[in-house]
Length: 77
Image 1 (cartoon, rainbow, N blue to C red):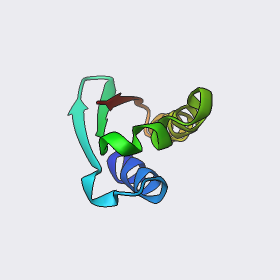
Image 2 (cartoon, helix red, strand yellow):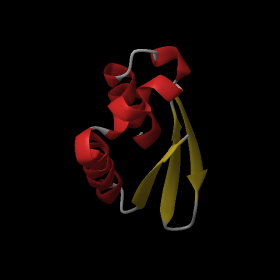
Image 3 (cartoon, rainbow, N blue to C red):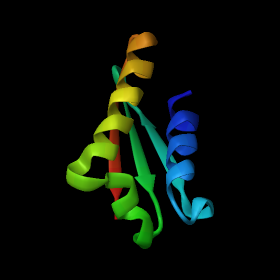
């Protein structure tokens, strides 16, 4: 659920939606989502002063908390 949510949000933001990929690493109590986008789109995902990235992480955290888990979003270069 979290993976699809992040993919949808990020694809809506970037110029190259085909280059968006999310890798999910499951742990016992937490899930790590590794986000890769085109190098031109990294700034769009992070936003000014990290506002967009923070908003995506907040939505992701709320979704994961509903399932009793913890989710972390990493934006990779």
